[in-house]
Image (cartoon, rainbow, N blue to C red; front, side):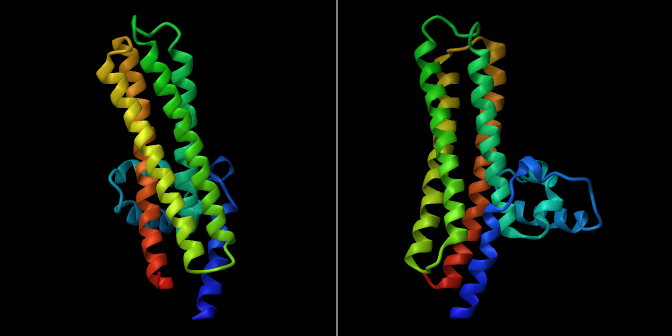
Amino acid sequence: MAKPIILLLAALSILYTASPANAATTSSPSSSSAIDFIEASCSATLYPALCVQSLSRYATSIRRNRSQLIQTAFSVSLDEAQSTKAIFANKLINGVKPGGMAVVKDCLEQIGDAVDQLRESIEELKNIGQAKGVGQELEFHISNVQKWTSAALTDLSTCTDAVVAGEALDGGLETSVRARMDGAARVTSNALALFNRFGTELKVFLGI
């Protein structure tokens, strides 16, 4: 059993070797196979069309590697959350209704928390790739990814609900902000779904 585990851990080291920022390239003969792999993997998510759309541009980097797929999904999620936070903050100067500033400040704080939690999740992906032990050590890192990503998803969803329910923003701005936050929440949900599938298979493989 030791040899398969060593091989598995070596393969997982790819989790931290690339990011979407420099992964997108032009199409190649292997792109079609990679996109088929992405589409099949995304079928396990709640938003498969968005999953395919957000990951297909990195097909030549992902190839048919599940670890790279997951790393890319989390990097896309972090990028989307950071972008949403920046856009939200920049657009709020003139669009907050009277009495709505408290809701907006809370929402910005929640988006910031989500960004931090996604960063923590990505660090834990690295820890999985670098893990030298098995069993409880890997289960600990897997659990952390699931915990922090779930918390990020909750913060993004709570922020969206608070802005809409509290009527803190002007109508046009509210629609724009909600669309951005919904997008960030959905790619985060997809990243978590892809990881959960991977984590379950890893635990079964290791018998933990």
